[in-house]
Length: 140
Image: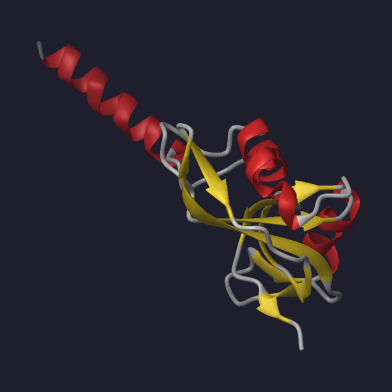
């Protein structure tokens, strides 16, 4: 029985870094990057099509950055590096859309229509690739 318990503990230790709070680059792209001509009216459809909400839970806010993958990757290379060495703030402003949860509708999540805004972006990067979107700074 001790071998079984040790195996379970080992699996828990291995899986801990894979929690929902950590992302890889592919998950980051899915959740936050779009080159499309997305508008704030597209929030509900894009979040649904990309399966961003999990287990019937509605994400309260999800921000999309309207840029190419290369433009976003460049933030990890040329952005202002923060004290932790992993966080970078863009030197330029990006168009972003903050999709904000409104209500449950037809067994799905409905998001408010919003206008894109320009702002610098904050990214956490690992191995030169963005893996987490941080708080945006309002331009203005």
